[in-house]
Amino acid sequence: MDSGIGRSMDRISNLPDSILCHILSFLPTKYAVGTSILSARWRYLWASLPNLDFDDTLYFDRSKARGYTRIDVDPTFMNFVDRVLLLSDAPCLQSFRFVRYAVDDFSLVDTWICAAVKRNVQKLELRYVIDVPVKLPSILFTCKTLVVLILERGIFLEPPPSVWLPSLKILHLETLEYGNEESARKLYAGCPILEELFIERYLFDTRRVIDVSVPTLKRLKIEFTHDGESSDHSDDEHANQEVGYTLVINCPKLKHLDLEDYVSTDFCVENLSSLSSARLYAGGCIYKILIGITSVKFLELSDSALFFFSTDCALPTFPNLTRLELDAIGDTGWNLLTEFLECSPNLEVLILRKAQSFRDTGKCWAPPRRPPNCLLHLKEIEMRKFNGKEHQLEAIEYLLQNAKVLKKMTIDCRSSNMKEEFGGFKRLVAFPKSSRNCQLDLRFSAMLMNANLPVSHKIYHLGSKFYGDFGWNLEIGGGFCFSNALTQPRSS
Image (cartoon, rainbow, N blue to C red; front, side, top):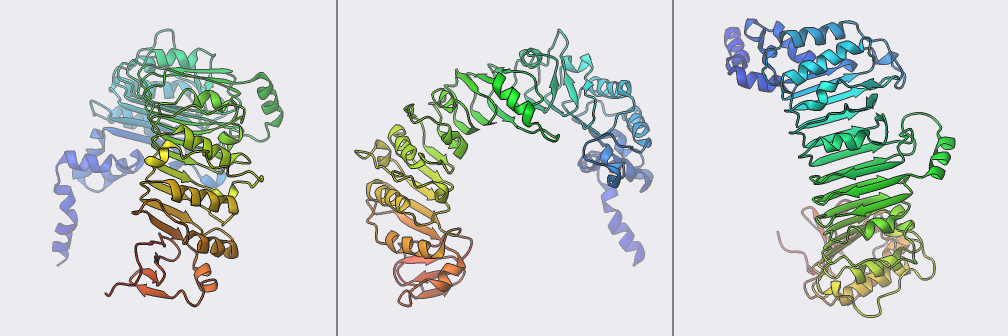
């Protein structure tokens, strides 16, 4: 019996080397090498791994670490990396990941990076959480096989005069220090097929102008944070805002833009006619971005983005926009909603994420003078955090009455006051709808159903749903809960 169990448990050792190496490649290299003690069959399998992952957090005592300061690590880590690279016989490295919280010998690290480049590495990820930034070896900037390059923290980016990365498609630059204003542009210029770029900045980044002019770029994400990783930078932030930051984007093939930037004071956006989707969490001159991305099909705007939008500036027309997602948008939010309806003639999906945060200024909802063209195409509306305010109900009533082909309106009431919530619900069910196929879905809290439903509105339970005798179905707590298509519970 015992021998049978042993044979069954050792079935994995009979798999081909290629499969076993593939399995081991998902482990940090420390644990992959550790399998060499299992048996003679496993002793040198790790040496053929195409993926190497060195993370010194697996070697030091986390209880001794304090923030991101220099800490003591197991000295065997350096020897371990050196020995693995010496014994590794993989002709091509698919990935090389190196995370270091303390560096004792920078020249040795350079040697490891050079070894990865000479092994035709395809993906290289370097992260240094240290006090003194590391300068990268020049050989890295002429690696012909590199497809993905991720540089994070503790790195001083100063490319050599000659940069040529002919295979690089994905580049991440996260909280780095730069030699000068031209450092990043020099790097971009040496990447002839670059398609994806992620830039994370913080206020210690001294560059005043960030110029992303990459003719091949398809996806761009930028995050510009206020605080970075240190303590109080309020004085530095004030000084930086006085000087001003400028963001320039010139990418004729860009498809997707994700921008989170509350620090830049000026934007220059051009040649974005190919842009399909944009997520804007930004302040400052947001209007300059909007007029440069009128070709988008999907647009998501934060409350801060619309807070900084000047009411003196007319919205541009978005002829291709089919999906619009707005966060809570401040004092002028509902007026801006009206403008967006008028300027988006082909809109099909409208999402308002924080309806209860839209402030009531006495003129929150001003319906368009005439029904905008988008109401001939609008198919789906979702309003989250609804709380029964008058301007919300007026907007819903207008949309239901004028959206000719509306298929579904979803209203989430779960985070609101129960009394206002139920009062609004009673009005909602009575609103006339222009679209005969419109389904109205409401999301309620269980507390509302227990406390506020009148006795005449009976609730029937059937499976995971609840059905009412006045034309709606309910799923308590988490799901859609109102459908005017149902009038009576169906038999099981």
